[in-house]
Length: 339
Ligand code: CP3
Image 1 (cartoon, helix red, strand yellow):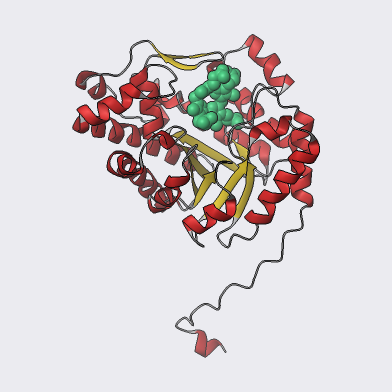
Image 2 (spheres, protein in one colour; image 1 turned 180 degrees about the horizontal axis):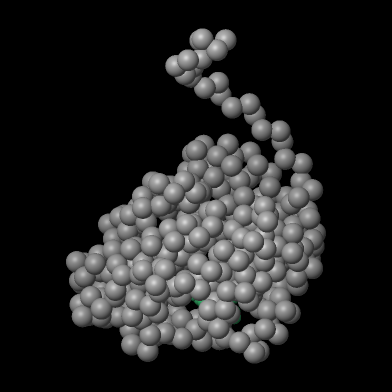
């Protein structure tokens, strides 16, 4: 999830001098910002410091990241000419600084894994079509219903961008990928199946040969968890609207869960936070597909860093039951002779 950000005094100080995109384009600095939460909080993995909008500049989207607002476009993507103007991403040519940041972060991290991420097609489309953050996504859904072929073309182009971006980050050293479909939860399951799932499947299929864990996260998307699995996710992010035990039943025993603490609990009295964290752990560790403790969405800017560090210690101290012995594998050819 978002690990680096405004809750860190060091990040706020840096952002007084540099924009977010300045940091992203400066690999030495970007690697340091990526690693800071690992050093300060003791978390078990880093997520590359970037934004879902970063690969869209090189493919022709003119945008700014407005403080306290989010991505704002100079000109929203509304018609066929706008969609066809979205080009292909060639990461080594277009985003060399991202690949350099991955390599540098890996050097600083040692054995701690680095997660690469990208925005999923629907979430990217919602910023592109609305032109700015939106709650109802009416222009985006309007394009979907009124111009389905154009909308599918947009999804396919954005899937190509995300797949190329993620694959290049893995080749540069990232050990897992996370696809953020923050706004997919605003869709009906039928609309998700028809318009979005094919694009998400295309991304995960393209990444399959790389052999890294593929994590899918969508906010408010309890009804979509099984669909994320079916699209090829090895792990699904779960928010606090769905209990982990329920999420586990939905995805079944072969898909890992990640989540699902409400980030607002980091502002609550410690006893409440501890109770909720233990409840998540109690349910998560029982899931046979594996469990990554995490927040259900990004860290809120007014979160005290020391509460995050204390939460990480609580999670690390939690007694994880010994893994059950794996079911006996079927005998392989040659086993007989070796015995
Ligand atoms: O190092 C890390 O932990 C990675 C951090 C990260 C950022 N963006 C940096 C950022 C991640 C994982 C993202 C992904 C992202 N960006 C998503 C998907 C995840 C989610 O939160 O649902 C989305 C929807 C965006 C688009 C975006 N960028 C928004 C809505 C905003 C917030 C606007 C604001 O100012 O509150 C941004 C800006 C942004 N991206 C910040 C950070 C740390 C905010 C602080 C800043 O502007 O410096």
